[in-house]
Length: 383
Ligand SMILES: Cc1ncc(COP(=O)(O)O)c(C=O)c1O
Image (tube, rainbow, N blue to C red; front, side, top):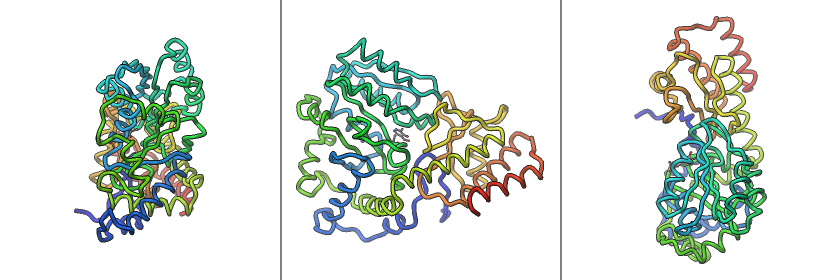
C-alpha cells in the first residue's frame, strides 16, 4: 500500500498531519474523566461551526445516518413533505422520507441547476399544511449550491413547517449559519470539511424542531435524539462514543479556531477559483450554474470520457478525483476543495489533468501555452 495518497475528491479528503497523528493515540475508554473533558469541548465548540446557539450532536454513522436522524426525529407518518431533488443525494433523502411514511412531493430540478426559491414559496402557498421542506445545501453529484438563506426566509413564515438541510458537503466549507438562516435541522459528515475519516455524523436542531421532536410518534431507537440529549447533558454519549474520531475532531476544531471559520471558507473558495480558472482555459466547462466552493464539477470537452480521465489521474499520478454519477457519468469530473490541500498538490493536479487530457483527446496545447499557464499558476499559488 502506498504511504501517500492525494485525495482531491469531494469527500473523503486528505487529512491534516496533526489529525493523522491523533488517530494513532492510545485508546481511552469513553466513560473516563479524560474523554468526558474532550466530549464537552467538542460539543461546545461545534456550535461555532454550525453557527448556532442550539445543542450539537454526534453519532457514529456516515452522513446518511445523520440524514435519517433528522428525518425520524421530525417527520411523523402521514406528514406532507416537500423534498428538493437536484441530484443523487436529494433523490436518496426523498426515498428515506417515503420509508418513514412521509407524503412526499418532489421538487425536481435539472442536474446542474439550483432550486428556484419561488417554486418553494408557491408550493407552500398551495399546500400550507406542509410539515417539512428538505434540501441539500450543496448537491455533491452536480456541485450546485442552493440558496439556503432565501429558502430559510420563505419556510420560516410557516410556524408548523420545518426546514431540514443536508449540509454534508457544505457545513464548514461555505457559510451556512444555522440560526441566522432559520434552518431547523442541519447535518454534516466527518469526511468532508471536517477533514476526518468517514464514520461520524454531526447534526443540530432548532427550538422549532424540538417542539416536534418531543411529540413525534415516529418509532426510533438508535436515532432517538432525546436519549442522546439527556446523555450529553450528563456529559456522556448514550451509546459507546467514537473516541478516536471525536478526539480527532477536537484537533480539527483547534485548527479551525486557529484560522477562523471565515479564513477557512476563503481558503476553500480560493482553491475552487484556482481550479476553475485553469480548467476553463483547458476547455472544461462549469457544470453547476450556482457552484459551491466545496467542489467543482466540470463538464469534459467533447469526445473525452470523464471516467477514463479520472482513472488515468488515479493510475498515473496517485490522485483521486471523482467522475459523474447516473446521467452525468462519463460527462463530468468532480474535484474537491475541502480538507488538507497544499499549493503544490493544487499545481500538480492541474498539470496532471492537462497532460492526461491531451493524451485522451489527442489534442495538444502548445509548449509555450503550457509554460505560460504553469508560470501563472505558480504565481497564483505563491510557489
Ligand atoms: C450532499 C451529500 N449528502 C449525503 C451524502 C451521503 O453521505 P455518506 O456517504 O457519508 O452516507 C453525501 C456523500 O457524499 C453527500 O455529499
